[in-house]
Amino acid sequence: LSAQAEQITTGEKFVHLWLHESERVYGDRLVSIDDLAKYNQLALGQARKLFQQYSVDKFYAKENSELLIFCHFCESIEEPVYDQILGVGNLGRVLSGALEQYNETNAVMDLVLFEDAMKHVARCSRIILAEGGHAMLVGVGGSGKQSLARLAAFICQYTVMQIQISSTYNISDLKDDLKAMYNKAGLRE
Image 1 (cartoon, helix red, strand yellow):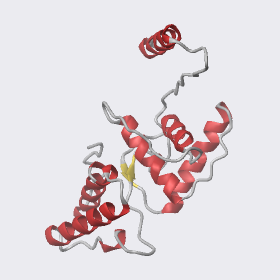
Image 2 (cartoon, rainbow, N blue to C red; image 1 turned 180 degrees about the horizontal axis):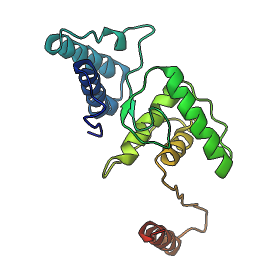
Image 3 (cartoon, rainbow, N blue to C red; image 1 turned 180 degrees about the vertical axis):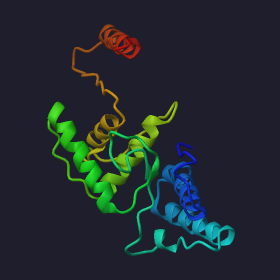
């Protein structure tokens, strides 16, 4: 868990954190919509049974459900505090600001930050900051996986390196690329 005790001030917020973390650990690994719907049904059932005093139905509504995301950039990317994002508008504001900062120092990414894209950035940043974190982003080409991952890495203040493969790329080139990445990873600034 990335959450600190100072941020979890109420029982209700603890339940929200539990639901969020459960979905990240279990729900994010599911690949079919039916499986995710079944997971959501089970999570909602458990929350209703174990935490009757708190209403969590708003996060699982079929239409106009509320956002349930905890991330390291709930207020801004400059102050990493793992807390709950209160609404899509707040998440959009923070990510739009991060994208502007990214575009000032890197090649411009012309991203449209719709709700699902913003959720993916939050997921990716959580994975990147986790010790030993790793993910395989699967989807059709041109869907923005690489751009969203780059934005998440920027938010986490990491540098992205990419191997450029060509028809003449060989094992020696791979070794040189890996050597350069290892040297950069081992340097202290």
